[in-house]
Length: 365
Ligand code: PMP
Image (tube, rainbow, N blue to C red; front, side, top):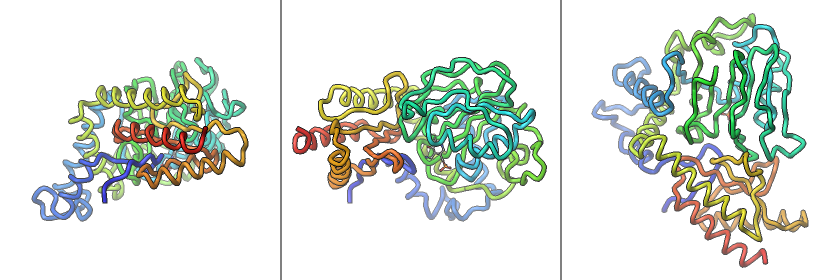
């Protein structure tokens, strides 16, 4: 069977060459006679894998020396808890509500500190990033979700927070374009979109923020200090997922690094948004100026809700038959969404547009 174009929001498409390399190395990793899955995480064979993954990540993202790179578990969702558990000082943090994941992060933090929603685009249906260029106040940190996977928005600027650490969830935009790590206190991302398979969570944390958790009873596994002291080896890390992230990062480097990946992402996004904006039959839901490079939600221009719903279902089903899978919008918002992460080739976007033309001709005129 040939491979489909997979527009899933995550876990999502991986570079085919990476999958082939992993398959070739599956039962005998580079002459060790073992699969990476079978190796002790403290073995001589495994150590270079995790070290290489970290080195590549530092290189591609330009992580400054005064930041630790941690490979943890629990997904981005566990970071919703670890951030407040470890950064609480005065007991108050600022959150910007730009979507479902942003509000989930805030809701979780409320278990350990007071949160203040300093800006929100909820009233606009989360179709844009609010204007909040500067955030000041008595906050332990400011939390933002840099790319909002469900509504397809991305911060077009970074808020100025002065001395207050800026914490960002970059799950759905990590390594999609350049990011100045030095502007942040903590960056975190689940791997299962741009980095590799699910199971490993990337945390990049500035050294001065790694202190003992101030919250009594915080489990060892939820303390950044414990993970940092042990080089992400406090317990058994997600060894195989880390290896896969390493292969994806090697692919990025061979492809031309972040500059080339960014160019490709901009090209794909410009093609798709350009098509949607010019269309009589479809429309993008995220507002210009706040649009994600990675997640592109869209609707037909049908205004009758029942007819629109039936058309969406038909679109998703027929697209899947044509080899374009996982195009349904998030269950909370409906419609369609094309996630065009780093590993989605330009030909996938071209195939999607060709299908949209065919579907429109048959159903939308
Ligand atoms: N934040 C964002 C922006 C996401 O897109 C997701 C998942 N799609 C999450 C957090 C939750 O991530 P996880 O499933 O890794 O906990």
